[in-house]
Length: 229
Image 1 (cartoon, rainbow, N blue to C red):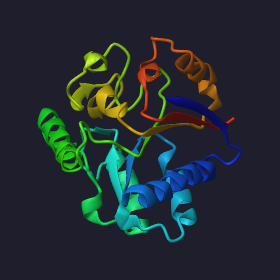
Image 2 (cartoon, rainbow, N blue to C red):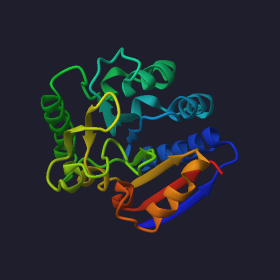
Image 3 (cartoon, one colour):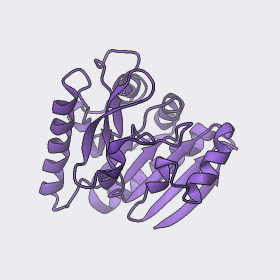
């Protein structure tokens, strides 16, 4: 695994260029680009930039997943899916079947099992041990969490399940999250960290500080950090 640190003057534009370069490479190599989306504050701006820079990107050849979801209906303001639908899927005309949504409106355990089964079916069809993202986007919390894998969560040590129901420390507390076995099966990971206030946490994660869940993130090929400072 190779680590790469990038500093952005125009964060959203540079994030979009990074994603689009990987998209075109994956489509050329394998006919499909599998992208895992993150929640948080930065996706809307990045999605806007993706739309503006995508050009002739064949969106029907892009398959989307979510690293985590809040246990709310898809129309709810806290829904990660809602943000992606409004700022990316709708404007880009992404086919509905290309979006693998975590159903936050149903029982969390059932939603996690459903999502895990959906990804496993694709992996089996493609001859993979686990669903393999071409690129997985991750944010970084103030406590060093990624997806909805928070410090001291039992889910941190999961080594079999790919998706779990979890409880977070801030509302809404009930979440559904990918686990590290699935996260670390990705070909490439891109951390999106626009906030310079997280400078010390980024350094701790990169240095392997075990207090931060993000320090456990790996990838088959490369982990990149796009930093807004």
